[in-house]
Amino acid sequence: MNYFSNCKTPEEAKSLYKKLAKELHPDTKNGNTEAFQGMEQQYREFLTHSLSDRMNEFESKKQYADYLFDFFKEKSRRRCGSNRQKTGCI
Image 1: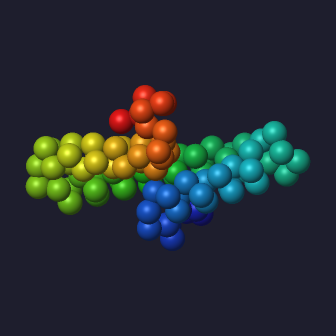
Image 2: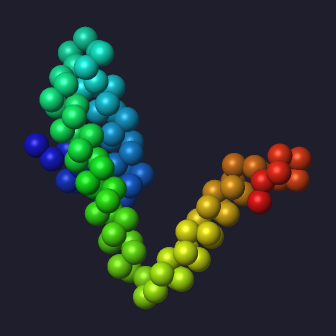
């Protein structure tokens, strides 16, 4: 069973991973160790393929580095809001 076959983005996969982890984790009442480990492996593979697909979309490593820089800069902006100077955010 491929748990992440319908996921289009890493965000969708992460959401599904969290839901499945709650259901399949061995410490839960109906947990299943083998299913949980298989799901984790599929999640890692999905993220690896997703990252390599994104890298192939860019013509050069520099473009990819610029993309990552902008992504994390924007993420920092959203997290810090107007308190950037007080919290030391970018």
